Length: 405
Image 1 (cartoon, rainbow, N blue to C red):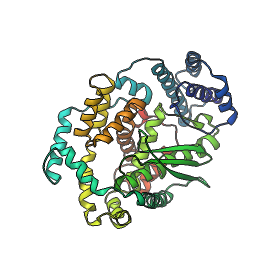
Image 2: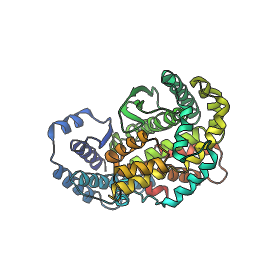
Image 3: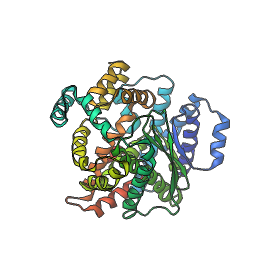
Image 4: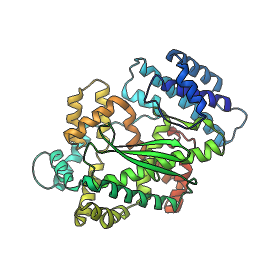
């Protein structure tokens, strides 16, 4: 298995030469990366080698039949299948949105009708002040809660400290772990964690669009604690270093691993700040730091909770757009009406669709699958300690998305 794992890593690095977005992180032996950079293996040969590895791997693990060994085998198999699928897309293969999501991320995303979103928007109509189209009123309302540019770093660093403190109460973080924060612009995403290995990350925050007050905790948890930074650091510590499973030294973005990564990062927000704790913390700490009206925090989060019910609207826009049912203008209009985005934010999301395609399902469907798995595994009426215990085990395991169902 270790030899197959090494071959898989080298194939992933070779695939990255044909798809610059494929390798999200690598911290294995530097000479493997150097070799991949200089060898330039033809794309068709990468696919052939991957298929040969799949044949060698077989359908089930042999020898060690322990649960963790079976999970490792299944993980490697699904990651290799996703690699073959992604390179097929790079070569021009066209897959329907749901087929692509299933092949790359090991799940079939749910479908929602337009009427489903209309009903939620109608409920928002009564919750928002003013008259006119709901999405315009929502954007106008939310604009009252933008963090001033001069205060973004202070607010974000404060949120990071709070997220880390809450995470460290429940998870043992690797010694010396750290990350740096950078502010960038003109990206198709709002935030990104670049994991560098040795328990260190660089987190970039996109300042091209307004950063709302709720995004401080969202980004601090999702990209940092207990999100991507902690997820990658725990994989490095417990699987790569402690077990010698070198396959986890590479993170292919278009793979089942991403649904686990994004789902746990989003669930990390809820587990770090459960229930009313988040509103209380932000009202008492972040709103004043940002110079925003703390007495409006409760109302703001009531509106946000209702707006969150529209999170799958972006998936439907992506599905229709990528399936060729609507064009970019129609997709942007859908995002404005049902995802309540400003025109600029809708255009940014179309750029995301063009770059990352069906990846969008990993945020909301990933969150729902992770939440359901953790709460089911923790047992009925589980308290915070037990929930964190199950969550922490998931962060450092080779479990697949289909295994969450």
